[in-house]
Image 1: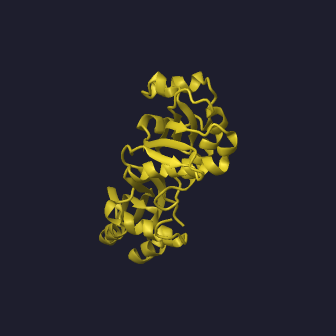
Image 2 (image 1 turned 45 degrees about the vertical axis):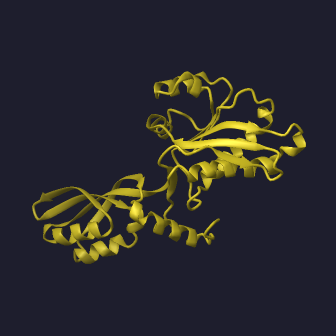
Image 3 (image 1 turned 120 degrees about the vertical axis):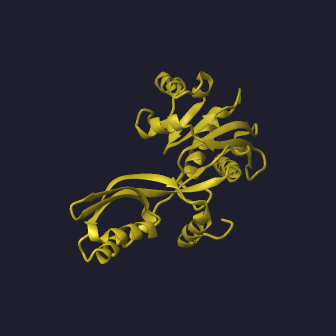
Length: 262
């Protein structure tokens, strides 16, 4: 099973999530995370986790990534390449609900809008909240659904897209099979990066979606009379081509037994 990633292509509109009892409102906006911050998280320079009130080390690192002092102080959580910011001002009951808001944020990051695949590169900002005065009306059963709905609403308006795992491979074989090898790579949505010819030998460097690699070993043997092989040198995530995204999403949803509007 290939695990995809979900993210957004642009800044979404502010989603409004209402608690089941209609007494609490959450206003949340989603946008793509800045490249510099994303890379710093991937490289381990910015640690995952829920942030303390005063985290000088994190603020300094975010400043180095081009984030303003004000925004750096709004960071509340870094979770799986996604971040949560609290942009609210002077909300009296925030300390009582912030942990639940983080839980709701994590639930959406773990299962995105398109096909309940994990999310990446999301910057989620809590813009405003309106909470009921009485604590009994703002418990987990009220907060979780409202936070999830608000984030999902914003994601849906931010051109959500799917990223797929892509491997960079070295495909090797006898020179006489060059035509068959390039044809095989291209038939699997492979993007040929480089071709090196030696004496009677050829090496092709190709980027190929993992979803297309099922059965590649036997296909390679067939194309080269058993004399070809391949090795992986790198793996990244790249955007699924727009023309096949809907079909891929349908396939994942069907595999998970999800309904059309779920």
